[in-house]
Length: 296
Ligand SMILES: Cc1cc2nc3c(=O)[nH]c(=O)nc-3n(C[C@H](O)[C@H](O)[C@H](O)COP(=O)(O)OP(=O)(O)OC[C@H]3O[C@@H](n4cnc5c(N)ncnc54)[C@H](O)[C@@H]3O)c2cc1C
Image 1 (cartoon, rainbow, N blue to C red):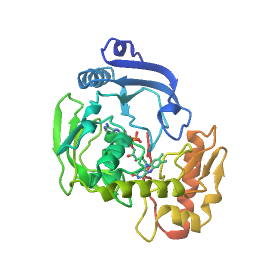
Image 2 (cartoon, helix red, strand yellow):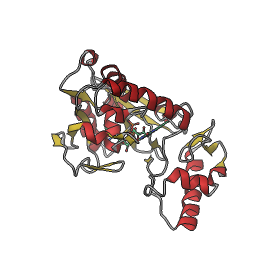
Image 3 (cartoon, rainbow, N blue to C red):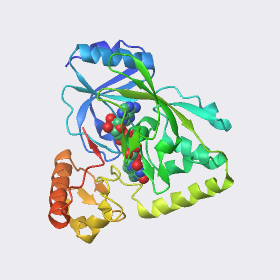
Image 4 (cartoon, rainbow, N blue to C red):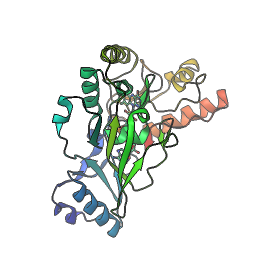
């Protein structure tokens, strides 16, 4: 596929035939093409051009819940939209933030000012767009509780503002971003200030460090929990499926729902290990566990 025309667009940097491993946290090798995009105008031109040329596209946020299986005829897109960091100097009633905002900045802001509601973001590696797409959350709650609206770029180039309501999200899922649509901005709210929140974030962060492999190469939870009595990690542990390993890919010692790439694991290793685990889970529990990690 020819991407020469992409290079002509201002605010876009194109990297062809590069290892996309560095754009995902599990770091499985995948040679492909990626463009970083610095403005909505540039993004609009890129997706319109891709459609005209019959090339697929796929957005990578922080790459913290993604596994890349195919790279042919696809341009990966990474948003690098301008963020005015002055917004984090004081507390505001609401925050209009670009989708590429890293969640750790929001966590720091919440910790500094004790923003109620924002503790749900604690320790989640993500871009704001990816966290909203996934309705990311922890035992402290989900991001849907602090999102007021989401701005979306449609494949036609039209921009739509989605007002969030009680039907907009469910467990690790949004119900409003369709195929080809890209989250470009979101408005976040908080529920006031409370110094106890700062302490809560600090304590939950230490708890996470002791219970999750935050420093290894992984893609977060691989499986969705089925229900409160069938949490994927606990079932995997109980059935001793954590002993399964394929080449450099193995189950984390810290958390059985995480797969760690110890060096040179591939997508084939990932696919084989999740296939085996899924079969065993079904055989022993009768439950079809659903993947939380997104495979593209
Ligand atoms: C160590 C570790 C710990 C984790 N802990 C948690 C946790 O506690 N809770 C939790 O919920 N998750 C957790 N995760 C998973 C991950 O952090 C979340 O799923 C997060 O929301 C992914 O955000 P991202 O920006 O990395 O999105 P990506 O993984 O890059 O993308 C996820 C999906 O969102 C889509 N997407 C991303 N950006 C956009 C956009 N702008 N517009 C449209 N679609 C988009 C992608 O195409 C993909 O389908 C963890 C991951 C790791 C590695």
